[in-house]
Each structure stands twice: as structure tokens, then as C-alpha cells.
Length: 88
Image 1: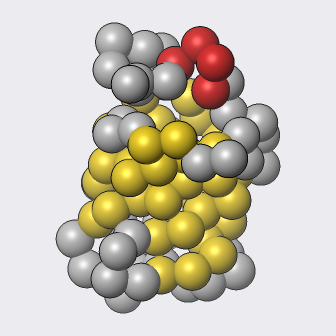
Image 2 (image 1 turned 30 degrees about the vertical axis):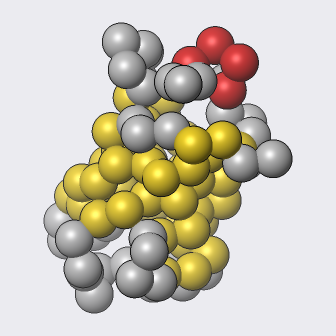
């Protein structure tokens, strides 16, 4: 299930760092709201860093699954530690 969460997030592409905030999260995915960008490619994987409110950074690799006006759908390679960092 997806959980509403507003965590700071960054994606590293070869040309830039994309900054945004999560809209929701699950054990293996997030929806990240960012400014519009053409730097991301569906199916490509990028370094991803998330920081929950007063939490430790969670660093993994995320594959872009879709890009929409709502946000970027990203599947994370590693299981996210949701029970210990959920903001709610």
C-alpha cells in the first residue's frame, strides 16, 4: 500500500541533480514531485536519496517507471524502511 509522505528527495542524473518531495511512498516505490524536466528517461535507473522528517538519509537506486504532471513514479532497488521513517 502507498502511504502519504512529504520527504525531501534528490535524483542524480549524468547532467544534473533533480530535487523534489515525495507525494507518497511504498516499500519499493515513490512518487516524487519535481519541477518539469527532460533529464529523466523512463526505464533508466538513477541514484536516489530520500530524507524523512528528522530521519537518516535513505540512499538507493531508483528506476523511473513513469513521468506525469503529478510526479515521477520510481521503483526503488532496495526495500524502503517505512516503519521507521513514516511521517504522518
